[in-house]
Image 1: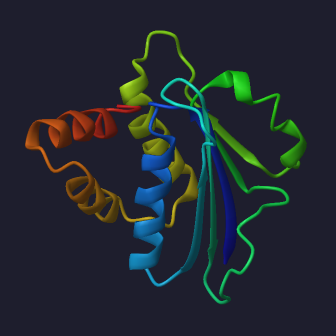
Image 2 (image 1 turned 45 degrees about the vertical axis):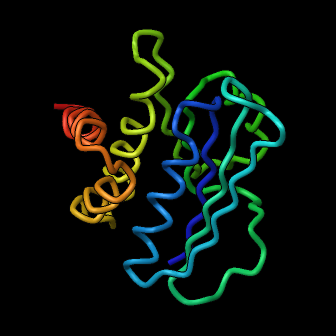
Length: 151
């Protein structure tokens, strides 16, 4: 199995957090992983992207993507910009809703992705969330958002 994931959004929406969590989960499950976060010189509020390549058999040498299997979008303004990368089979997962706080978008995208992808054990994600969010109140808030999506 190999998979290419392109994640895009604005700084502060959790794009890099999603990439790091997914990379760690796939590594834990014995996949070869390449994580390429890129955000240039932007600060909070600027464009942030993350490429994640996963393969079950081969080491990944080149972190660039040709046509992602998954396109995770935290901010709809980037859908058109990166439209050229997707193909007819690319699964687009987005969550640009004006009533959702930026700090919640990463957990919503993460949950929607694992539901669509189907291979990741939710418990592996929860373990990574505990590692990522060391303060208990931050972990609990993220866990609440993650657990209540689509319920």
